[in-house]
Image (tube, rainbow, N blue to C red; front, side, top):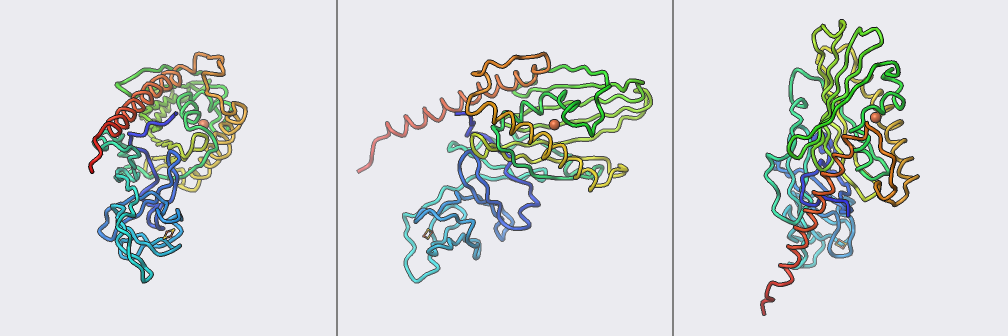
Length: 336
Ligand code: FES
Ligand SMILES: [Fe+2]
């Protein structure tokens, strides 16, 4: 299995909830996330325990999720608390609920069955709330293993050929990668042929699929004031071979680029180029795992390989934790 279950995952942008619940599958599990009248977020398994209808097809009535098929109603803890028809609410009917947390305009969901990790472990994207920045947000969906998208983000040399909009073909490039605790970082610097400006892009991967890209553009032959921009690239597996991809770009409020220009550029770069390429890669790989295909590795794979190694160790640790929990559950005495 390729998932870490006991982890916080980015589930969507907070502003998406203004239109209603978010109904999305994470790690093969359909989930519905919604806001209660108190302002608190709730998340339930999006599957009624009666005949397995999606709750997200139904409605929310006085903070209760009402299944539109036969009318059972559930509270945010997943307890059956009513029946819209004239029949009784079966007390045994129970739905799994998930811890959710909102921070930096991101809705985070905990997909594990263990107690959730402290929310202070969730990576920060504080520029989403910083009045110095103007943020543009988007959602992408890619039919590929989320780890291939992580590989793509950790090797930013791909922008040279895959993203002509950045006009990077003639820049002199250099890169390095390193680790900080559980995170992997890579820094890519590029200098224009006449050295009129330098760019340094540093990307930080935090498990399972969170990427924070810090962009420095230094005009005037590398001596001008630094223009700093940011981009969050947050990946969550929907299934083994499909992924949700939240992206944002934060530019200075007085950037000459309009929100529409940024959005259009990102649709080109993420939807039409990155996603297109990664779906092609997945198609050629089929269901094989990357390293089982014995890929040729080149120097610029360094950060991706570091990331893959860390992720594999975390997946293994998580699987051991879940197996230990399952074993202790089986060993527990059954009460009469
Ligand atoms: S499937 Fe939900 S009440 Fe029947
Ligand atoms: Fe890209």
